[in-house]
Image 1 (cartoon, rainbow, N blue to C red):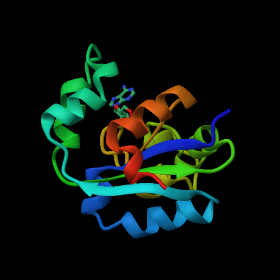
Image 2 (image 1 turned 180 degrees about the vertical axis):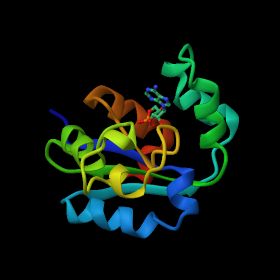
Image 3 (image 1 turned 135 degrees about the horizontal axis):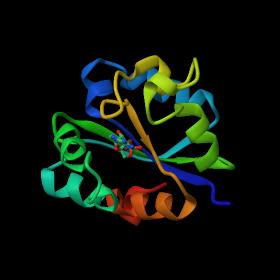
Image 4 (image 1 turned 45 degrees about the horizontal axis):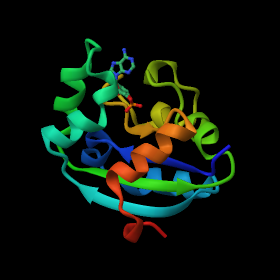
Length: 138
Ligand code: CMP
């Protein structure tokens, strides 16, 4: 069990003014932010980040959506970080997300689903390193 996960606050949640409320919900849940940046992804970067989904029918729409506006990327630290974060954000499809979860509160659709959360310890490490050098992690 690792103690980090990686998240992005996606373009929909940023555009709708939800950065502050989402970060508050994350830190209130006990996460420490150990790295963070506010950036606008390029098609190349978004495509590489989601390369694992490149054969899926939703890949093109997913990449287009992720470059539609700026995002906040962060590394979060807490015991049982990956599993607890997935509970905190709720199901990928917000219509199936539990009440009070971040996606239930702030997401509108499966693409515009407000936040990303790593699905395994291995991917958390890969995704955190994709966005942040060691000098940017505390
Ligand atoms: P995320 O956790 O960022 O990982 C991949 C993203 O693809 C996912 O959130 C959704 O926003 C998006 N997506 C769109 N359609 C699907 C689907 N059918 N299954 C899973 N993810 C999907």
